[in-house]
Length: 81
Image (cartoon, rainbow, N blue to C red; front, side, top):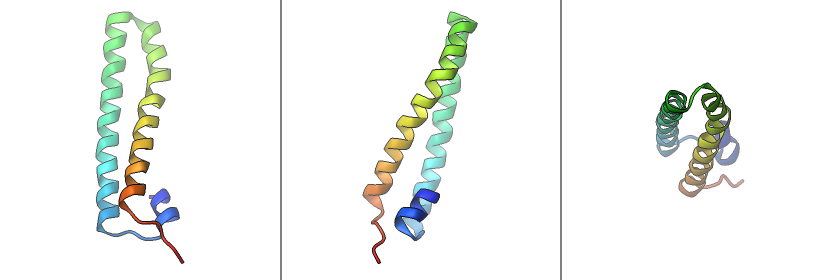
């Protein structure tokens, strides 16, 4: 919300839909992250679980946020005075 407001200075239907889409995909990205962590912990043990938990989460969300910001920048025009 802060990124869209700081860059675009307005909220329209497209901005709200993109934010809802972002929340939904972020939720599924978190479910994917948790599933991978559980699978790794089950098959490879607690040390691998801890390593995966500490490293995989930020990678998944960094990729997701980069893709989402790119989508926002392409679909919503920048505010000009």
